[in-house]
Image (cartoon, rainbow, N blue to C red; front, side):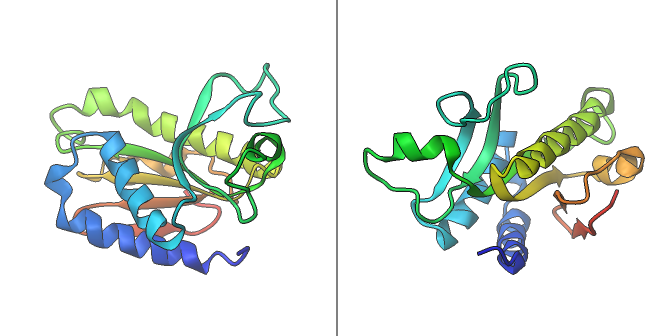
Length: 184
């Protein structure tokens, strides 16, 4: 499943769900849950949330670089046993997808802009961490999904240094953008 066309289909599924219910998104966790739900339709039993990057989950953890972190949504790769052997296989397993999620709610571009403008750099830090996960073969694909209700991220992201191997999805209640590799 190295072919990434399925990612485009998952994004379309997410967008259909997101556009139907933007008002019911009360937190970043809601956005991550909706993405996980879309992924679970395609990969039943293989989707996990808040996956820790720690010595017990990764054999290649470097404590100087891999500070306490969790990946918002993970799809395990094929072949990871669902039995007691999982604990010996997990630290060297290459996952299919790592996804990070950011939510910029209604008011983020206007009334509470000062609170949310710092999330733009946080999105970039997530992308840099995902690029490292790809480099270390912790996952085959990496995505940052930004649910950008008022367009704050879309209007401010141009100055970011985005890793080309990490996909960026921007979802808005009225439209969506998948930026090409090398963007922003």
